[in-house]
Amino acid sequence: MLSLRRRDIVCQQAVELVTDYLEGALSRRDRRRFEAHLKACPNCSAYLEQIKLTIQLSGEIEPEDLTPEARQDLTDLYRRWRSE
Ligand SMILES: [Zn+2]
Image (cartoon, rainbow, N blue to C red; front, side, top):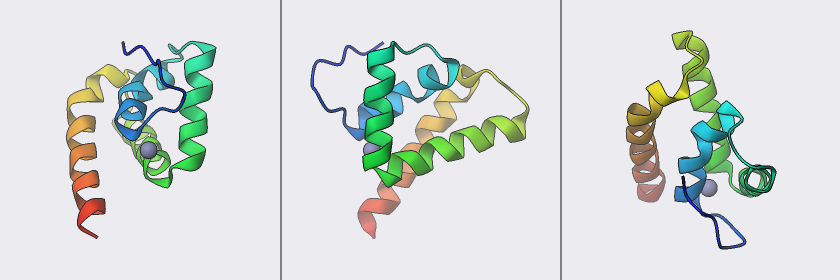
């Protein structure tokens, strides 16, 4: 688990927090930071939606299972955004 010392979280941190967020495992402060980042960052909010959809489609409510591929997806997504 990351410790978030900085006021604003960056995309990479947001991504690290997604599974904890979905599990309800974040502290209230971290959750608020995470949600604040999502509001400001369409990329991460799109990513979260994609993860939620993946969970729905797979019928799993265990985000840990998704983490490796989720990270791979993210890497691909960011690569694409950067190249646009
Ligand atoms: Zn972001």
